[in-house]
Length: 123
Image (tube, rainbow, N blue to C red):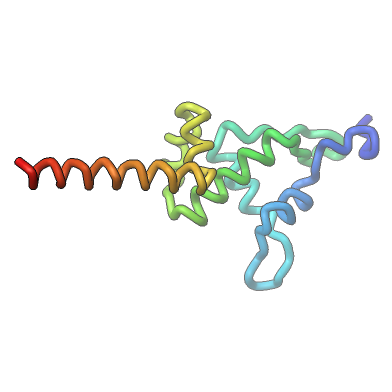
C-alpha cells in the first residue's frame, strides 16, 4: 500500500501541475490534462500508479516535465523538436534548458562570426 508520508518524494499530478504553473485559463484551476497529454507524447515521463490507480511522479519525471514545458512554452519548439532533443545527449538538453549556458554559446558563436568577417576584410 502507498503511504504518502513515507514516500513524499512522489507528487500527485495536481501537485506537479502546480509546480509547473500549468493553469487552465478558463477556470483558473491547475490543469492536469496537459501533463497527461505530454505523458502520451514523451516516453521519458514515467509516473507510478499506486492507490486507486492515481498517478504519482518522482523528481526525475518532474525535471523532464519542466524541460518539456520550457522548450514548448518558452522556446516555442514543436513536440517533434522536443522529442528529438530529449532523445539526444543529456548535455544538449541541459544547455538548452539553462539560459546562462545557452547565452554563452550564442556569444561565442557571434564572436567567431565577427572574427571571420574581420579576417575577410583584412584579406
